Amino acid sequence: GTKGQKARYQVKVGFEGGQMPLHMRTPKLRGFKNPFRVEYQVVNLEKLNELYPQGGDVTVGDLVAKGAVRKNEKVKVLGQGDLSVKLTVAVDKVSGSAEDKIVAAGGSVSK
Image (cartoon, rainbow, N blue to C red; front, side, top):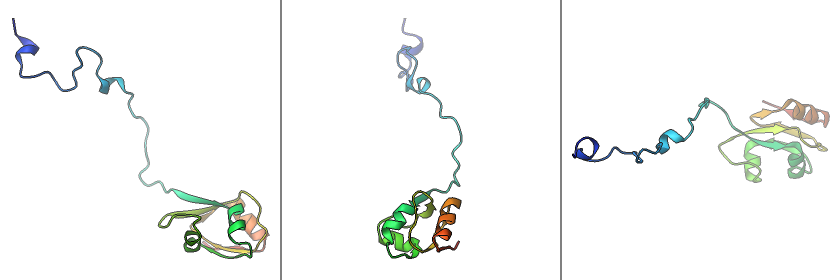
């Protein structure tokens, strides 16, 4: 009488006694993850207004020194908030609305 599965050395790995196995119950991961996607750390104009009350030059190194962003990562300036000082911004990327507000406040953007 001991033929078939019980006669073999052992039961298959992942066999759960006839119940649907875990690896078949879990959903498949669908979609696509772009390996070349670039993640930016964002800094809004309101934050720059707080960090530079007298205005001045905004660089990635300076933002890292002030603790606004992490080092070795790209930085993007976004246009949330108002700008009341003249800034010279030199970061990896600047949104269109942020650039308009910086220029309107008398500053400049270099890419």
